[in-house]
Image: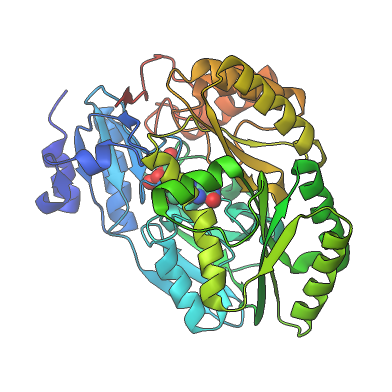
Length: 466
Ligand SMILES: Cc1cc2nc3c(=O)[nH]c(=O)nc-3n(C[C@H](O)[C@H](O)[C@H](O)COP(=O)(O)OP(=O)(O)OC[C@H]3O[C@@H](n4cnc5c(N)ncnc54)[C@H](O)[C@@H]3O)c2cc1C
């Protein structure tokens, strides 16, 4: 193989082809996987990204795109072959434009979500995407994983507010579809294939996102509840009474909350219970606080909830959110967890949780089930703090997910982590269709091979275990 490094340096400059000290790019956020990148390349423009991709294609070297590296499926981690380039988008980090009237923002792939949010904030708008990694996760990574977060119930996931995309394809073609349109039925909506493709179909270099009005009124409530069935009934009742004002409906087990109390020292200002709900309501119409209090009083009277506290200030609301947002890091501090990011129809959640917890506890009595997530979307992070190996636990959880008509990845993606389980759990006709799409976008398997879809060589794309 001719040395690709000088050719890449000719495209981006010598300073932006790194070959030493690559650990931060080679290890995933959970510190479970590591790879051996040949080099890390840091282009500063879409033309440079295209130049890098053409160079890699000519050398038959594959490319692992990387944003903030906060992904939880090892999608941005190179394999152990020493023949993959990490393409970091971090230098492409500009907010190119913001339009308060059309309610759109055009942002480069490497811009952290929190920075883009700040720009939206300055014109009284929001990007309708909130997640605990927003300080580091980048627009390109969020689009490439179709990130969800806590406001999907109200606004949908990233694909629902991605209006336009600029991307570089596997042959180096630049496709500029940065349209700021709400409605566009002129042909196939191909950009939706890139959303959630985890770097396997194209490199996202910029996106146009739809903005929403900044809510004037916010109510945040923490409830303790007897069980998941009560939680689902509360969701139904609040949806009937308060409709789309419910912007987040989060669920936490005592297993998750105890980890936060132990490892982050956060207190829980409510009667301790086995299950908790964190509910946020937002509106631009006054009367939200009174309507919410009335609806929550009815929930307490009916016995669906044990206790309820309402945040009386922004500070208190952010303390309540801190509990929820510290769970992932607390699991990490507890030595890591075996993660399942699953979804089922909301009505099936109680039965799924009962069966899955009972089955895991029976087979692994010392395991701690840390269950939390976006109950309003039927999405639970069914995490198990237990010694490896993960495979038997994965099988228990995913088999029940298939039984209940659910998905083995609600929002985190497949990456390298869930490729085998996807093959096991997804119908063959769908897997075949995915392979045909991949071949048509990337016939030489240059873009993140072995992620999402198994490569022909079973070792390709597999990072090593840390
Ligand atoms: C504490 C914490 C909380 C989280 N909470 C949530 C949550 O609530 N909801 C949720 O959905 N996720 C959540 N995540 C996961 C993660 O933040 C998201 O998956 C995020 O979208 C990843 O963005 P990133 O820039 O870090 O991407 P990376 O981790 O760098 O990459 C993720 C994938 O996208 C690909 N990729 C990255 N950039 C590009 C690009 N420009 N073009 C093409 N492909 C690209 C990579 O190859 C990889 O496959 C959480 C993570 C952490 C650490």
